[in-house]
Image (cartoon, rainbow, N blue to C red; front, side):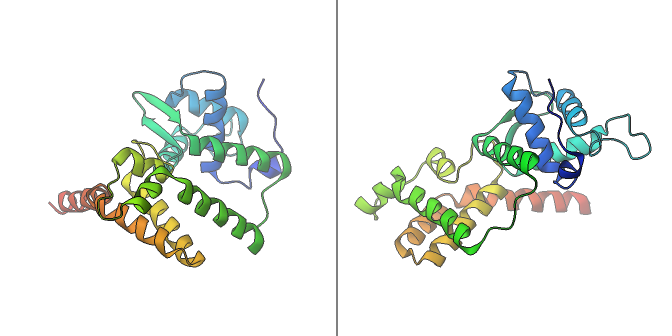
Length: 214
């Protein structure tokens, strides 16, 4: 049975958040997250947000497709329209947060103490990571695999370079804010070794621009 949420609450949330929540509900039921199934779920749970303006009884599939791609760019889902989409661990956490907002209303802005708590969690996670432990033991010969690098950034092999770079920059900013110089050097070392992976996003953008000019 589909959950019935307060229209005033769900209309105040972003389409991307509502989409990842709908995908999570499909995954929980053990169903395949095909594009058409996601369109149905989004429209069924949140009709006011996923319908045509002039035809409120019909789902706007194009709108859903755009939001699925945004979820993928954020690293919340992997896959494509042909093979279907899979929820990532990050996407599952976001969906859980969205559920709380749907039940209690949009979350208030984090207070400075709450922001600090979130930063503490990230710093602790980095300090306990296996790659950082190896880095401390032998900085000169330290190497990190792509799998370790992606796991460190809470991502999968499907996560696009743009999101990897955003997550890495977020970690670096936190480490600087906390005065964690060694962690900063560790992250910079990882970025240096995986520079080609991060730059692939920029290369694809340049290729697209060149093709557009022709």
